[in-house]
Image (tube, rainbow, N blue to C red; front, side):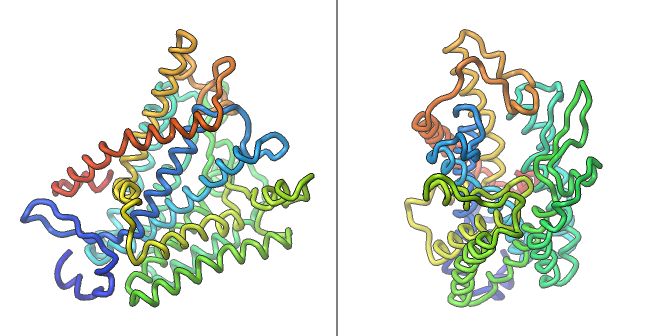
Length: 408
């Protein structure tokens, strides 16, 4: 970043890491708290995907069947998607100091298109399916992130307070639309989830409706402004927000009238009642789901704002190359599952075939599914295995001036 830009935000220096590349390369300023929180979310996301491929069959949020440990394993990963969308907006705001508004808009628009292409071609075919027949296609997180960036490329031309207001309004008000039931593909994409296309040959299902996720990204863009504040003011704000969001969640959830289409109910035990209270809707993310999860995100941004402990260095590194980590972790988990099936059954054809939607991402072999300790061990193996690769890519990107690397 240019010296003049640094002079405008001197209060950021204690919480910023400076990456160095070649001697003549420009310095890039990164806010470590944002990177480490994003990295923690990426690592937790890998746990969820490892459970998808290796865990026992069944809905982990179905309290009638799921164990407490399985429910909590799924629940803790709920923080991932809201963190991705929020920090996508925050990252865009932080880049304003080194890009003109037009340059930022062009970058957000083109990167958004690129993410949509990646979701449909790379993530679906190479990561989740290992085939190119497109019989079943889910439009998921990367697809929604792409559209959120495209919309944000327009919102950055209005005042920041208005962008933030739009984001908060979409988050807080989109549950008012829950009563509208329509199979129209456009409505499904905006406020599903549901089928965009359903024929005997092909199924396209929008799992990540756009309205609330666009709201989270817009709110994240407004949040980026607090990184221009003095450090103590910023930390006070982040802490207050980290406390206010879960308090708002608890109060609205207790009323049990608005904010989530699935009300909580008293269960046979106190513990299961608490789980019912926490069991909010992700598809689409309800107001209560976002209040609950974004509270943890804010807590992380506050906790790491002063410094990042050495123990979180791996998360910090992964948070600097999140898309790269995403694109390589899925095929690794998928390949491990296919190899396990081959050793166990002598064939692994299930992991190369498109399943029906209710069995996505693959049709389980007979008796397939491993206990949570095995899932956690495999998750650790995946993250540890990918760390050297992420470190290599981070070093390549730090040394290179190639613009295309910014899209990964």
